[in-house]
Image (cartoon, rainbow, N blue to C red; front, side, top):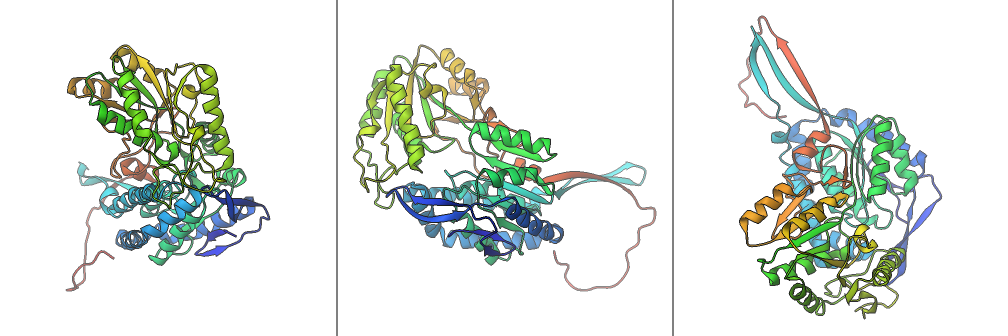
Length: 494
């Protein structure tokens, strides 16, 4: 059974509730995970609280040394992480390896925390009075991460929070809990003191306990928009700082002057990678006429060459994460057909390279989708790409801006003026120009607009440092400062 990681060791907890863990490519149950109760969460928070008091006083040199050591462990064992991701989530090994790499980039950013935490200083703001600013840790913070990125999303937050001097309680998805426990153990091996990072597995009961616990100062969340809204409302009502990243309906606009082969490649890559279980997946392709017919034909041609199957067999796309989720996505395909969208490629007919009992649905392409159809209005979170046809650039922008989500978008064009106009006019937090999945590098911040983000600060980068710290301004006057003593040793950082 998969338990928890609290105060530097694995524990089972007190709750008797259990959840099943599956291999999505075979449909077989591979284990069980403990589902924490409020008492288990409280135990983890207490451990974090004890650790936070000393960790906040650890020097920046000490924190950085731990992060560099952790980075080396993750880098050396990246294949092991990818294997665990594929076994529990189902995405193909190459995709899992890419997830680990993007997580490593945030660890590397956090290794530079001494620069990110530098304050400002102003001498003689008044006669012999100086002012300067500090950023200090919050204390105990919680990270609640989703099933679709069991390594990358925890690494968006945990390294930055730890580098800033906080202690963390991480609640990964109960669908694929294995990777989070490995990360916690490797952090401990890198020298992170006991209790600074704790992992509590669980479901909604654990989430509510974290949101209600008075000693949890801040919550970082990634998941669906309804849950993100709830987390934000409940957490802020309890006086916590909250960043809750929600769902998406990401549009890719293709203008008539675009390279259609490049656009078709991008649509397939961004629409069906990780079986569409990405908050940055392209699920709505907006074709500005007269390119739709040619673009749809190119996309369908590429889809015909995709292999859906077990992610350990070199396939292009793996299964969906659970049987229930596969059934839900299949229901959207049926709803799209019933609503009159044209199923150019129907993933329900896929012949997977894998166990027939796996949670399969092949890549699906709909043409002539309209904005009133559920396959457009809802975040499907599966390998379903819908093509909407519009007559002009202005109509495309209006369509994107009318959508309640504002996570990511892309435009494909060879017209620099049109691209610049689009990045200015579109009401979306992350924009790609001939880049279908515009996930920022770690030193920029990740996050959307509108119903895709609840809270003011985004993940990692400068926003991440600001989220996990509080600002303080000091005004000082020293009438006659003196320093004495003789020490010929070389000054050190510690």
